[in-house]
Length: 279
Image 1 (spheres, one colour):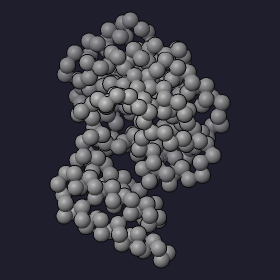
Image 2 (image 1 turned 60 degrees about the vertical axis):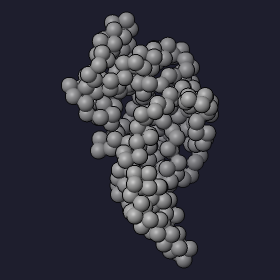
Image 3 (image 1 turned 180 degrees about the vertical axis):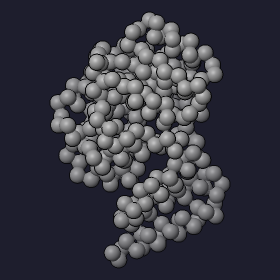
Image 4 (image 1 turned 120 degrees about the vertical axis):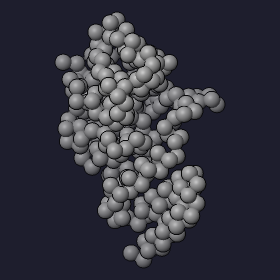
């Protein structure tokens, strides 16, 4: 059995998939399998994946006959994984050669209740390259779940994480009802049961494209509303966190043209802040 299963979902990304996959195959740590889940691509992605598998026996190909979404594709990979650890790669990003080895070394040296280690990320955009998300969360963090409810995991890309396999047995996989923020929502659930650790150096390149899901305001609005509903009891227990959610959703409503609804939520945020002062 390999030490690590790397899950790489893809959909019509033939122009960047090979770069992403080769950055995994070029890791200095080599005891892994690469599970490429083709989520119903209609371009030449299947041929590209089979070419990778023919050249490297660590590559396993799985194909969905139709597009089922990124969460389902990742869950398919998790269900097929054989490794003690599970990592994720996106089909348009690049790992630096030491990424997987450094994370395995760190996670193996930590107690079992540390379920995930993540690293910093180089952001690559039109304006150049910079380090993205410099929040260093270590195992002694006392309020991890509350941090998640405050969106403080927002910058931890799933491709920057290495998980223990049992985390998914305990917490479940990606929420298949979500088509945005699903990686952050998973981390919120994991934070209920496990601690996190951080390697405070950038070990991958995050390429942000003009059509990135993270820029789709309508999807992000639906996801933010869904998270508020899913964790409503815990969010409502802290008026400050509730206010933050109202303000975030209000901003997204403005971006999609729902200005009247946005103003209503701004008032709710103000009232929640006011009530919190007297509790």
